[in-house]
Length: 320
DNA sequence: TGGTATGTTCCAAA
DNA sequence: TTTTGGAACATACC
Image 1 (cartoon, rainbow, N blue to C red):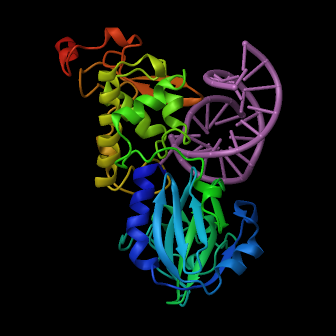
Image 2 (image 1 turned 45 degrees about the vertical axis):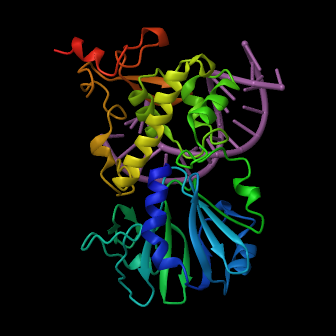
């Protein structure tokens, strides 16, 4: 589920439990997602104390006391949970967000169990989807769930290797309308794939891109170098406001994986095909853009920029 | 059964 | 050279 707001939520929810703790051991059940290899990562992490937990784009970063860095990317289905190793039927909570009674699983302390009939869910996660865990000096285990195995666990002594090619943080003070204009006009690409490009703006994903474009009244297929200053200012404001709202609501919860926040109740286009646009009342339409499901209001997001509503609410005149 | 999925990367083609 | 399309990764749900 993870885009910038979800990753930020996870970092905030787990920071207190991780910073200051020493890593006793690291175990992986899916070596392919660990680089530069499980054995080397195990050696690098053993005995190290976590001095900070941070987010860069969609990466979760662990700063270690010897200067090393561990990055975790959740990709499509990754999430964190907790288990106490001492318990055979440990209580585990997703992302460290307490959800009493939500789930108990013995597998939390014994990852990747065979199908023992224990299908208990850990706040939406299943015990057999624990792909790795970090055991800490307080006896607790940070669990890495990842049903689809797309996630990545990367240790490096040079963070630039991982984050060096990432674009601007959209909530950073350096992300100004002028900065956005420079990035949009330096290329001639459709708006949506450009916004999804992590080397341009780091942290937007499919949901928040659709939402930002709708809030800005811009069609996802508009050419990036065709926006006037006014449109760019709208887009800049829309990106920041939708990301901030996502963080404020603790992220978006969708489908069978990753219980999170309540942002899904406030999405205006994503996943709302056929439903009424909250702005104009017209029907939300699904498109395919850059191989991604895309949701727009055709009335609020005209394909030709010049046809856009003159003010923020003119289109409402067409409703009902 | 087939289509779709919150992400990224690589390669081919335009 | 830049941009786009398609496939791949691997699994689960509807």
